[in-house]
Length: 609
Image 1 (tube, rainbow, N blue to C red):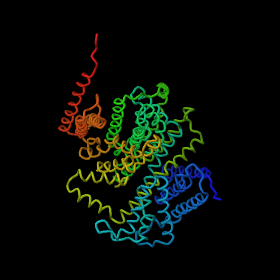
Image 2 (image 1 turned 45 degrees about the horizontal axis):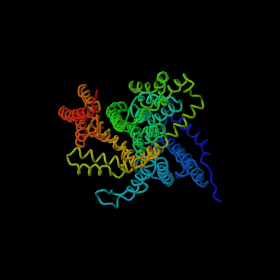
Image 3 (image 1 turned 60 degrees about the vertical axis):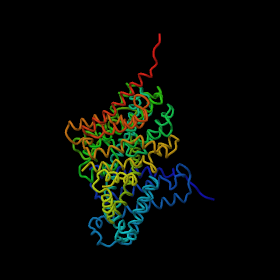
Image 4 (image 1 turned 90 degrees about the vertical axis):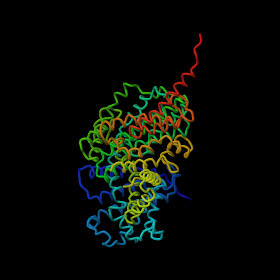
């Protein structure tokens, strides 16, 4: 007889671990106490791994269901190993800090715990994100071990197993490197900020505002998805999480007024993904970028503002044109909140204002996030609807740790990849191959980098270059064949996953184009004279409309086949900052507008007496 049990019995333990981790983060990253980086990262990752093994079953089919008791027993054993790894950093801290790289001996204990750590990181990554990143990290590990047998063009001189484990486990260039450091500090601080907003119900103002703003707009539910996802996405930290947070409301509404399931799922996926590029709180890679460039987070967020606005403006334009073309319905009256009620809730946005002001005043990213989180507790007390009790605070702390599971696991897996790249030197070979293939052609070089980032689905280490890589890394989640955010939207919409992925690509096309533009013309990153930046803003906003109209085949009326490329390329020319390109683009778009105006006027029925 096979014994089975529901994993829910472990939730109280996970709750306690989550609260403890969040309090640990506040104390040791919020400026109250100082802890050596290896120990901070070691404890953080061990706690994250324990949470994953307590909460996430090894197979998806057991989620929320009973599973063999042997699985629970194995996961408890893995929790014990994760705790032992964290204890190792506490006991051996002095040796780790004073270690002479590749000189000091790698002991059997180091090898055992290091191997266990690598395997556990791979497993928690698989459980939280699926196979794509797991397979990439595993492939890099295999490359590190056996790459010496490959042809010289892509191989390396060979590294021993001891050296590989030393890099991954004992040094700050592998699992416990920059990626995890960012996840355990800045990213966790913002995840906690989002968790407190969510738990206090202050984030409800996002949906209310979205519904109010789109109440009289055709195809309103899709526009609700844009506004709600843009607002919520800035503080959620995860595109798939954003889909499930807002999509459960917006996708059924979109289908109800006439949008196809694939289109509805794609709209939510693209809108949710945009939250990762929309300041003030962007995706995880933005914080890593700030650390790698040494510029700080505020310049990164400022530079990313206009491209993010264009991204959402393009999505809004395409949705509006689709709604008008198909004569779709409006937002149901019962979904529209009273304007006075929403206005009374506007103070719910104060924590975000406080966060932005703190950043502008020059406070560190982490302290700004924690200060804004503390303000949520204070502001929540003004209303019974939002008031955080002691239990509410504990719930928010536990939710913070739970929401960090996927991101911290990914950061640790990314550390594996970075460690192998550093140890083998394959990064330099890769850059050399790309440079040779591209020659002196900057466009080809950018194209190769874009494809690489989409395939890898991660950020890799001048602000334009970093943002270029960042954008395509983010876009991997809506790019088939592996487009997890699009799949999440498809699941809610009950649509075909791959079809939803391809529609997502179409709706997010501007995000694929903008990075090429701002590398050539930094005015789109708000870099340059006031006049240049102002003109770039105006022309790019107009250009995006032309681009959307060309893709949708509709502007003022149904576009002819030959009008679509005129609109598309005219919009493209206007997005690219430059006097001649703007004039050419404007002329192409104006020609279509005039022709469609004439066509609309001639198609109107003539009034008879």
